[in-house]
Image (cartoon, rainbow, N blue to C red; front, side):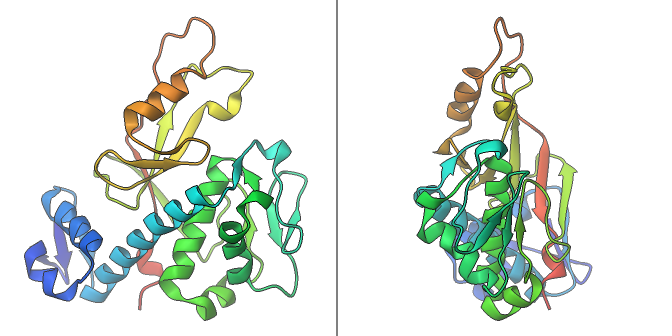
Length: 243
């Protein structure tokens, strides 16, 4: 259900405002769900649709970049733009623009390796850049830091429990019986594309059953529980960016 200025709006009423097929798919899903998606203005909704579309674009590009999967201990980055910190995080070097540095991950992916939560952060920062433009991005994230779930205060993130999954959401596969020798496979964070399609760093763009099968091969001896898709959703607070 979509509400704009406290009024329920049907998706088809919004179609003339939206040219992208992907964005129309998203608002159709919003309109069909019982969950309420509330906005003060149409422009706030349109910004969220743009951000979601750019999140999927960024995930596809990171998947094709050649960036490798590894644990925090073995993470590495392009030393031209980033300091590699002792915890496996990447901190932007002085005198480099955040937009140039974050896009270098797509351009020179072979110079980077990180694990899946950092990959999600990278996708969301790139989506932010695509959505708000270089100038605003560079102002907001002048000391960009990439590490796990540690987001800049100017990219506020919220988590909620539910199954109202929308394309562009961050979702989570849990692997409760993970192999203790491979603790990095205790879970896989993914970008959801809709239609049973997910991007997970180190796994690629796959359907849910393929991801679950992969994680089930990373379990301890005599496991009792299968990996599964959690009813938990992670999203940026889109309205914090929109005008």
